[in-house]
Length: 238
Image 1 (cartoon, rainbow, N blue to C red):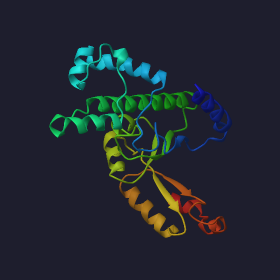
Image 2 (cartoon, rainbow, N blue to C red; image 1 turned 135 degrees about the horizontal axis):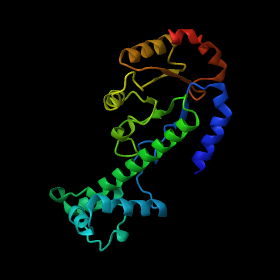
Image 3 (spheres, helix red, strand yellow; image 1 turned 30 degrees about the vertical axis):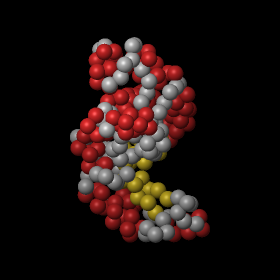
Image 4 (cartoon, rainbow, N blue to C red; image 1 turned 180 degrees about the horizontal axis):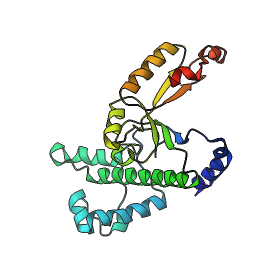
């Protein structure tokens, strides 16, 4: 419940100033971006997982048949991560691959991640119904990290997904929103001039994006150079 307490404080502080939007975070995931980190043995997660599996399979016999395992009860079921799945596959050979335990583990993670984000979005909407809620640095569709966009595409009021692996087009298709909830990120750095940034923004707007997040970082250029990237907001509005 720490997240809800934090949101209460954020809304109390900023809502009087009519913010353009709230962000639930940048490059969020249930692991580290979409890197292959997929193991969670926290007691609460295990309890939820063992409650989730009977809804999917009904009986432990059906789970064992699908997984190729010999558990006696759902309380014995373990989480199958990449390494455990890989080692079994190596022993079994290509004609006997069985990725069902790993697939269920990832699907459970995706479902839990999406449900928690939806809970936070709904909570913010209750606190401040007039301000849109979204995320920045949204990742490409992947097996890891929680980015099953079929679950996430309709959750947010705005999203700034990375423009890679057709992520923006996939999100636009799945969300079926008009106007689009996609927004662009416009990066300003030593090797990316304002002209290039505006050209990219124009391209993305033509593709259906409906806003922009202007971003720069001292990691990319010396802070002494920042004044030359100060731009009249009217240029971006136009």
